[in-house]
Image 1 (cartoon, rainbow, N blue to C red):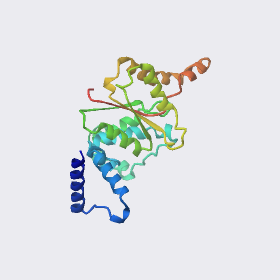
Image 2 (cartoon, rainbow, N blue to C red):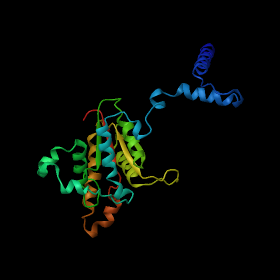
Image 3 (cartoon, rainbow, N blue to C red):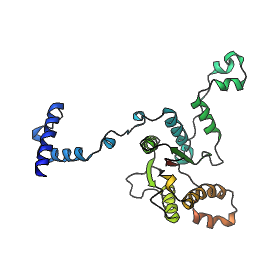
Image 4 (cartoon, rainbow, N blue to C red):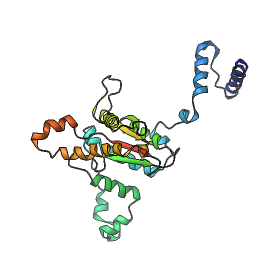
Length: 250
């Protein structure tokens, strides 16, 4: 084992000297050793993982759709009013070739049509009609990385849980409500949470029903009678945080 470590150390020094990244000698003997240990134990998939939106290599249409959906929560989560884009007066006065509206929609891009559909379907609480986004695809496609990068880019604190680990519906419900309703009391990260549920296809049917009840039950709570207020409050308030689910098998 000692000979292997010595050979590894020599190989590391040769690589560092060739690439010119060898640390200067006056910095001491402890710090380079720590850096070498961290470099040896760091996987390439972690070292070169995307950390900003522009570094994503996944499908651009999927990235923009998920970001657009997440930004629709800004009014509820951050209290930001949506900025309405003003159309150009020239485009309004002179539509192309004087075509009817149905034919003009044919020339819109797939992204523009998707944005219009997402924006048009908001509920009475100014939340998106679809409370959960589902990312599906084979392993290694970058679904979890996409969810984390998009959540951070939109100003959220990404909270990840694995649906296949929490087999009990009670534990599953507790973790969902804790991530979507509670804030960090430590003050280290005061950003609102965005819940990311990985391996949702491995969750039992009871857990899926819990997730659906959290979504649909809370929609009906706003229209509930005043006499049921205390019981409803005990069950939980309105769902005011986005949830992103990830699966391999849709």
